[in-house]
Image 1 (tube, rainbow, N blue to C red):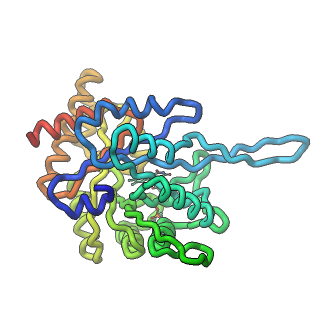
Image 2: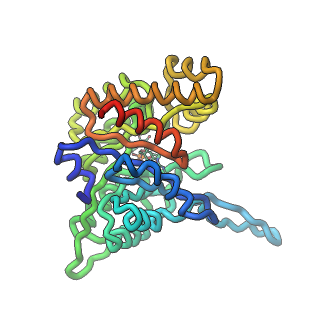
Image 3: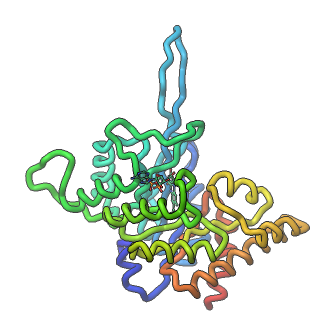
Length: 320
Ligand code: FAD
C-alpha cells in the first residue's frame, strides 16, 4: 500500500515506520542503509528520510564578504530512491520550507512525483546550525501550513504558473505535532491551532515529536480532538538509553524527561545496565500507547541502529 493514509485507514495492522537521516557529505549512503538492514526484519511499512537546510559559510577576500550555502547532509531524494529499490519499502521524504523558494519547492515536488514517490512529510524545518531563528527564503514558504497548501494545490493540478492541461500530483501529506508544544510557540493551545491549520490545508496524518511521558501524549491527542483535529496521530519515539542523552535530548528537542527514566539511567552501574533500563522503559511506553489504540509507531533512528533494534525486539516479543 503506497500511501501512509491508506495503510492507516485499512486499520488491520499497526503501522510501523522508521526515520533515517542522510549521511554527512562525502560519506557513503550504504553505511546508512546497512545500518537499517537489521531493522528490516521488523517489516516497516514506511521509511522516512530527513531533509536538512544548508548552513551559511562566509568568505572574505579583498574586503568583500561572500556568503555560500553549504549543505552538510545532502541526498534525501537519492536515498528515497535507493530505499524503494533495495528494500521495496515506501520512502517518505521530508520536505522543508527553509532554503526553498516556492518555485524550487514546486520543482522538487515534480521530481518526487516523477520518481513515483507518494508520500511527503511537510515541515518548516529547523534553523541551520549557528542561526538562532528560522528565516524563510524570499518567495519561500514561512510556515509548514503554507507548504501543505502548496502541495495540496499541486494535487489539484494547480501549479504556480498557469499551465495548459496540467497533470495533478497525488501526494499523501503528513505533518509534525508537538505533545509538549513547539519550542517557539507561546503555549500548547496556540500550537494546536497551528497544527489544525496544517490539517485543514490538506495534511492527512500527524507524526509527533518524541516524548517520554504517556500522559503528555494522551492529553495532546485529547486536546487535538477537542478542537476538531480528526487526522490520525502517530507517536514519534526515540529510545533514551544513556546518561549523555539525559542532557542532549532535552536541549536539542525541547522535551522533558520524567524523573522515573532519569533515575533508571542515573542509577545504572554500567552503560549496558543503563541501555537495558532505557529500552525497558521505552517498551513499557509503547505498550501503553498500543493499549491506548495508537494507529502506528514511528521510530527515530538518527544513525543509531542498536537502541531502535533493542526496542523493536522488546515490543514485537511482547506482541508475540
Ligand atoms: P510549523 O508548523 O510551521 O510551526 C513552526 C512554529 O511556528 C511553531 O512554533 C508554530 O506554533 C508556529 N506557527 C505555525 N503556523 C503559524 C502561523 N500561521 N502564524 C504564526 N505562527 C505559526 N526538521 C528538519 O529540518 N528536517 C527534517 O527532516 C525534520 N523532520 C522532522 C520530523 C518530525 C516527526 C518532527 C516532529 C520534526 C522534524 N523536524 C525536522 C523539526 C521541525 O522542522 C522543527 O521542529 C521546526 O522548527 C518546526 O517545523 P514544523 O513543520 O512543525 O513548523
